[in-house]
Structure formats: structure tokens, C-alpha cells
Amino acid sequence: MKLSLPFLKKQPCVAVVRLSGAIGMAGRGSLSDTALAPVLEKAFRKGKPAAVALEINSPGGSPVQSSLIGARIRRLSDELKVPVIGFVEDVAASGGYWLAAAADEIYADDSSVLGSIGVISSGFGAHVLLKRQGIERRVHTAGQSKSMLDPFSPEKKEDVVRLETLLADIHENFIAYVKTRRGTKLDDSQDLFTGEIWLARRAQELGLIDGIGHLKPEMQKRFGDKVKFRRYGLRKPFWSRFGAAMAQDAIVGLEERAAYARFGL
Image (cartoon, rainbow, N blue to C red; front, side, top):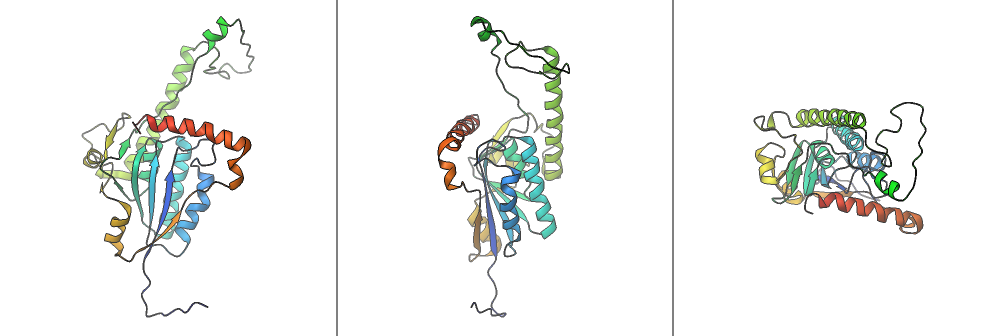
């Protein structure tokens, strides 16, 4: 039986949620709203935390999953009146920065990479290879746009126009979100939405983050040296290490590695 003494002051606790990896990929370690929902719910609700700290290390990924995760963080923060502080490690780029912007304040290491506020779509074209091998591509559709950007057929100008329209609309959503979250902190004399990336000091000057700092000393500065930390994050089930699941995760790992490599990491 645990004895509770009302006159003893309870030490503040900070819930630490780790958001590491690409967003919305097929692997079990990938960040998604469905996977993170129970983690975030527990972090915000268990033990009345003084704050929720986000450890962010992500090169980006799905814009929809980034939006869903960021919206869930904001809903829980507003509902439970718990402040959210983001701490960037190696990178918070593209969707990774979307997650960081869900925090009320953002801090980073001197060498952290931030930004890439843009949208990208990549693919391949194999129609020439098929032709050389004597393979004929046969596609039948109902609806003229159903086979848009088929990688095994020659690229069509009208398909590219449609794709660019979609990317531009998603980009506008991203820009609106960053402006809403960062507000007057942003340097409005600079175009921050070209997809460019910056190190933390420059990102601070541009208003994309609030300062240079690390999680533990920053939280001790706010809540005292005796502040406690309770950690939360995604865990892979033991059985996922074997068979087809292991093979799939290996492929996703290569894709994620390529995503980090875009930022020299």
C-alpha cells in the first residue's frame, strides 16, 4: 500500500514522446497516426504531466499522416491544457518539420537540419526498357485519367500537369499550417517555403524554431532539477523480427535510409 502525504510536494513529471523515422511508410516502425494514437493518449493523460516533450528525428514522409499526427497532438494539448515542447535531433524536414510545428515551442541542436517545407513526388519510367525487351504493355481503363503516370507507359504532359496541381495544393496546405503554428515568429521578409533546409541557428533567425537547446537541461530549467521524465514511443512486437515482416521492414529501412541521405545524414 502506497502512503500519500498531502503536505509533500509532488515533483513535476515531463512525458517524453519519441518521434523517430519516416512518416507513413509500410514498415512497423514507421510513424503513423494509428500507431501513435495510443502512445500520445497515454503520454498526455497519464499522471498529469507538466509538459509533453517531443523528441523529433524525421526526414518526412506522408503529408496526410503528418497532418493527422500533428492534429492529434494539438487536440490533446488543447483539451488537457498540457504544453508541448519539441526537440529536434538530426533532422526535422518536410513532414518531420510538420510534427515539430505541432509543438508550442521548438528547440534544436546547433547541427540539426530543419525546413524542407515543400512537397515531392518521385517515380521511374520503364517503358523504354520494356520496348527493348520486346514486352508490350497492355492497360485497359474506364476513365481517361485512371492510368495517370503509369511508370510502364510514356509520360503524358496532361498527367504531369495534374500531378503538379496536386503537389501545389498540398504545398499550400503545408504553408498555411506553418504560418498558423509559427505566426509572427516567422521572418516574413524571406521566402521560407521553397523546400530549402537550414541548420538550427539560421532556422532560429528565420523564426522556424525558438532556440538552441537539449531536452533534459531545458526541462530542468523550467521545472527544476528534480523533474522526472516518463518515456513513450513505438515498439516492434517480437514476432515482427521474423519471416515476411522482417523482409518488408528491411526494404522500408532502405527507403528510410535514402530519405535521411537527402539531408547528408
